[in-house]
Amino acid sequence: MQDTLPAMEHALERWVQRRGGVVDGVTIASLGDGERGLVLARDVAAHTTLLSVPLASCGGSVRGAATPAGRAWLAACAASGATASPVALAAVWLCEERAEGASAFAPFLASLPGRAALGHLPLFWDNGALRTALRGSPCLGHVDAQRRSAARWYADLARCDGGWAARVSPKTFAWAVACVLSRTFRAPASAFGAAYGALAVDEPESVVLLVPLVDMLNHAAPATDAPAAPCAWAVAGGAFSVATTTPATRGAEATIEYFSGRAPAHALLSYGFCGETSASAEVRLRVPFPRDRRGLVAGLERRDAHRSKRRRVVRCGLGVGDGAAAATALSLFRVASADAADLTRWRRRDAGADAATLARTPRSAANEARALEAFLGAVVAARGRYGPRPEAQDARAAFARVVRAGELKVLDHLELVARLAASMLEPLLDPATARDDDDDDDEPLTLDAYAALLENQLACDENLADNI
Image (tube, rainbow, N blue to C red; front, side, top):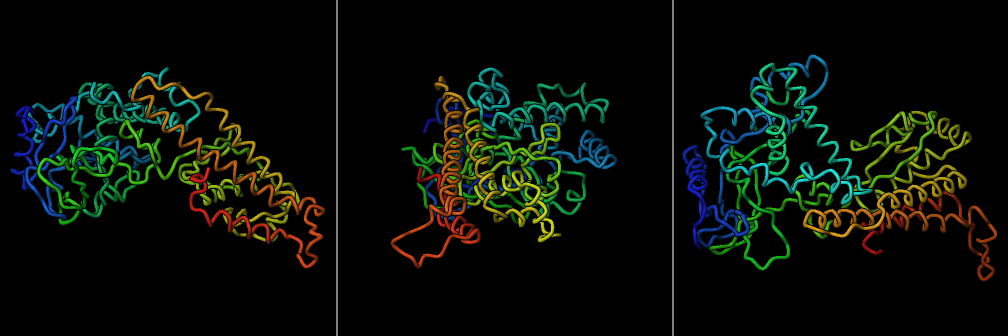
């Protein structure tokens, strides 16, 4: 294998070793087309530790919290009751290290991709191309949120640290955020002591880590003829370690799984690409809620749900095209479609119960019919927002098509559920359709029986979307 990599990248291997790390049987290699990765230098057995990097030699949110800008921001957050993003703190650390003339992490900083090499991330896509490629997808809103967050973080840091804007430009900070989004790992805060968990940080139980050399591991692409050495990583004993999961031969590329069940949209946001197949996809339905029942729906809102008082809607990310997601959506529409009698019945019979319990089953056949009609209408409206499928002109547009296709598949599944439930409910709405002259012993369908049948139908198939 011809070695064409610059000396600085091999210097990174030596730097990790000098700081107490282990680099055993693996080396940085050029993979062609400007790509690089970690390749085995010898045959290895399963469960061979290839890399071990002391946590003290890792960057990320813990180190960012200890920088002057990080401390000032966290102090302001603690005073106001706000929290700081660990992604932003990790980006702060990168920027501060880069601003230093002689950083102890210089070999690692030199190995990071430049701004141009990160152009495949949606954070940096041209705005017109972005909105064309992701029309109708919740991913578009996530990209907008990423951009707003990066701008807000930068402004907050500039307010808290008077010298921040002089040391770090907005473009440099955006580069750092992109590096963090695409190259970091999550580790338990317990591995770093109690101090981090006591800070005003989002998700204080986990730390965002930038791990030198390990961040060069590429994704384990399923459809490739090149030999690969699949690996797994772990944090234990004060180190971040990577070991093979199967035997592998010299020349195989060491890889890890990036997606781990992530929806294609979330993979695209973080890495700039996504898999052709995925077990999940996110869709977003708009559910109109009258003011008199917003309290009822509070228990049904997930962490990714967003409430807008101005538009009187709750946008709930349903996550996966399975029966559980459909049941959650239907519960929302049952509450939204309840009339005065339904609300009275709910509050009288279930005082103190949370909304998830309240709406788990229908309260009346009429309520269920209204809920299913609204559910179906919301699904059709969501699908209409996607418009025609854009023609893929480059890799970015092709990945956007994968995202859209997965989401439309989930919407097809939700429509199937709504129509199936409506057909099951029909005998309750029109008893004449329930008569069976061939079997006089049949018991008439009850609301409880309908609810049990629907629950069983949704539970029987873990991913109904696969059958569409």
